[in-house]
Image (cartoon, rainbow, N blue to C red; front, side):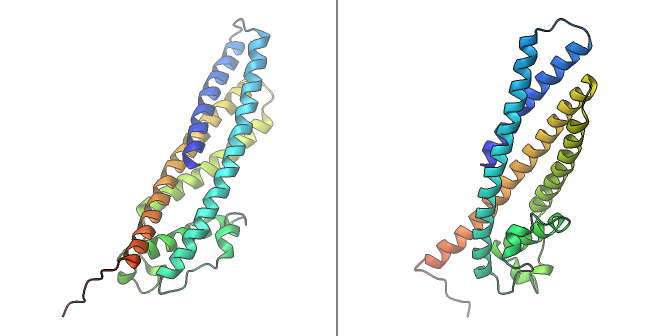
Length: 212
């Protein structure tokens, strides 16, 4: 779903580029057919609805994965996680808290899943942090900020230059969302791979003898 979300954002960006170009043609008093304007409006609205639907499904699927990964991580860590299980979901919803609780939760899951990380730590709070998770989180927060700016521009857009600016801002939003989605895919694959390796090791009938 993260990959599908990125593809939908890419398609929406193409539609935004064409819409901004169409608005510029109108501003420049170039001849534009009314049917072309109606088609652009309909395509722009449809792409927005598709983006919203895919985003919602992606968010649900990501939270399901995150909750399962958290349960696995609890079994792998000798220390309690910093946030209780309900915050795996509510941490994304509650204002202000959503700016750091989810990252702490993913940090603890990553540290619990990575081999050898906890051996160098005294608890999950002091465990080393992943540069990948930092990159994903910063991209995610940046996309949220761009989304708020884009939404304000769209609500206030009454004149053609403002409509063009809103379409251009959507392009930046889609780009930020694509980057965040790609990094999220890397995070999911990394944590899942390490947890799967733990599972396969536990199932292996052969265990090395401890050193004498």
